[in-house]
Image 1 (tube, rainbow, N blue to C red):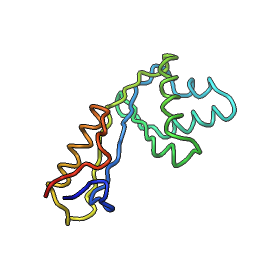
Image 2 (cartoon, helix red, strand yellow; image 1 turned 135 degrees about the vertical axis):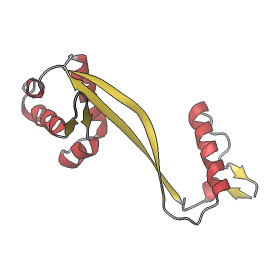
Image 3 (cartoon, helix red, strand yellow; image 1 turned 90 degrees about the horizontal axis):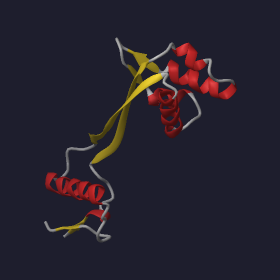
Length: 136
């Protein structure tokens, strides 16, 4: 019997990636000039780390985090504020789970069972017992 909470090294790494994009309803400089001081610097950093394609602008959240001492939550709040003001039309894509396989030496059945349990817990909010056991 193998208990999932006793596995020390998972052969995969799970991460979450949210993607935000928006359409400008006004010129970016007008958004920047609506602020002063530190907030203006913060908004300038956000705008500088966005890539505008034909219509939609993609927000490079990691780029903002790498270039400004802030957290992800503040960036999202700022984008939502811009939308409230009518400066942008924000589109948040649903979270995408990213998995990197760190090793090929893993038991696919164990990983599948682990994912099944994680998905069940997320959907139901029920974590059940402290040890989810899988019979090998």
